[in-house]
Length: 213
Length: 213
DNA sequence: TGTAGCCTCACTGAATTCCGTGATTTTTAG
DNA sequence: CTAAAAATCACGGAATTCAGTGAGGCTACA
Image (cartoon, rainbow over all chains, first blue to last red; front, side, top):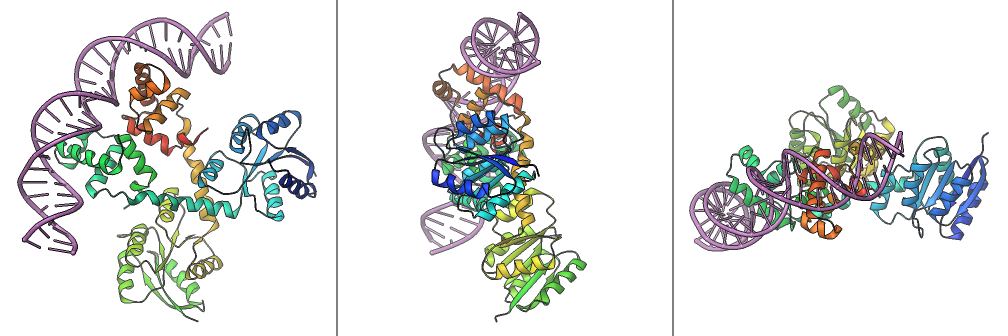
């Protein structure tokens, strides 16, 4: 069996200790290198032939997200599993979006971690249940911004604006005066508190306004 | 044990047949009503005391998404599990966003369906693995739109535009001439193919451009 | 029955964006 | 080193947006 070399990165030594124990007891693991910060991981990657990096997200100097970005650029063949406290949705989104090979919460157990390692080494992605759950929740989160109420006509106008139509074009499409369209625009800006159409459309997209109906 | 009443909706009778068999063999199920279209479900909801609706998404007249919307509005206490072919990410997104209680692919097996029913009846949500997987993939999907390459400065300008700044304000913030900002704007529109700043920002948000770095 | 919200329309003027065109300097990559 | 891409700046004019103000008709609801 081909054994693998791993780097683990976290700014808490106790955590590294536990992580190290769990990994070294695995048959398929050859060496475990330790880092407490992102740049250190990058240095180790140059020195050794590393198959997998397991890194925390919250670290001083260069954090896990930055590390993930760099690693995917410079060492695309090295796998990376991210660890995090699952505190915010934004982080989860970024990690997934930047194509980490795995993502596991820090409060996971030995079994899951080992499973994650084996899965990623096998060339597949591993996202833990808790992560997936959190990620789903982020969809619901956004509803908070849904309170501002635009009228039916205003939504219609805003939608056409997002489709890059001008006031004149919208007025022709809806068979109303351009002045009316302009009034709707003014009210949209008023209600959303946006200063520009761009801002209002951005609000609409992010709040999922266009996903209704 | 308190038994439950269910409505199943699908425009394929064979499918309804199988669904019916699986459900009626469950101890906790009292009655299974059948509908082939959304509006019919709404009528049945008025006539009977229904605990759970299991509905396909692709149906004539009133489809599953519309049904879901209506049901959540008029019968918030009735659970609803959606079934779909998982053909597109957009649909999955909508179903989750509209707070369906469960979501299971149509090619699921008996066990999973029964598990979904029990979970939802128990007051929890149930999303099948396949759905969650698909949903995660949608994040990667969006990368397709990432090909258009804006320069660093252009991205910077576009970002400030999304923050509702005018060319003048941006020029002051970046310590460059307003003419330069205008040139960047022109190039942004050129590269993205957008006709308006609004369109370019919309593209940027939807492609996750601002999530980088 | 009134009042509140929505939809409609109009006019003005200032500010801003959009379009076309051209050019210089700096940076990047082969 | 050299070609390509990026970043910088400029000018002019047409089109569009934004801001302020006013107003009439319609509907829903209390």
